[in-house]
Image (spheres, rainbow, N blue to C red):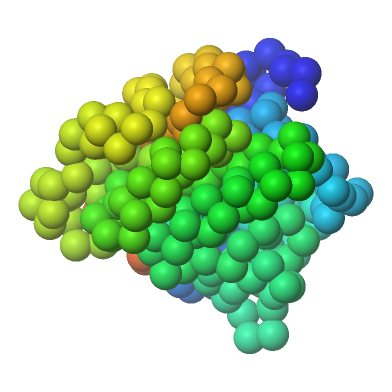
Length: 275
């Protein structure tokens, strides 16, 4: 995909963050903190990296994205809407009874969702299976998956990592959203995950470390992953939970709590938007 100026992606990510705030406010529940931290990464994938077509979401040979940290689906819904899969207004029904936009993505109900996720670690495992299938089909597709840092405390993550390295799945790229926080607090207090890069390297992965809010670094890492032909690649992206919203940044309390009206208005203002 031909890339545009970085400011183009920054503006989309800003809108995505506003959509996340408004959707979680309307829902009265959800996970804004981790959705805001990964907004730049998901924007980069859908707008500057993956071979996809919103008009033909099921086209053969398409690249696929699996949100293994499925609770951050407000970010994916917002990016899919901004990319043209459905109107932005649709995602304002987030978590409402009867809405297809539930608290975890449903591949049977929402265009562009490639895998229903929520049980941590399973999305990563499914992405390994997808990469194996694409190799058998020889369709040239790539698979991308996004994990949370707390998620990699799950054992099946490392089983999947071992399998991906064993089968030399060079068309698989995993990205770890390392914002340092999970529902119960800081990673180092709950269950230390560091050093992440070195752990993946020991499992046989090509590993990179970047600033997950710098589009230049994100795209450089994705380009390097494409050049790797012998191993899967993991991009360890250092991020800030609640990125862009003054009172949410680096606060574990915003992992799974929606803003009230006053907070939502302030958040949108912080992001340069209008209520």
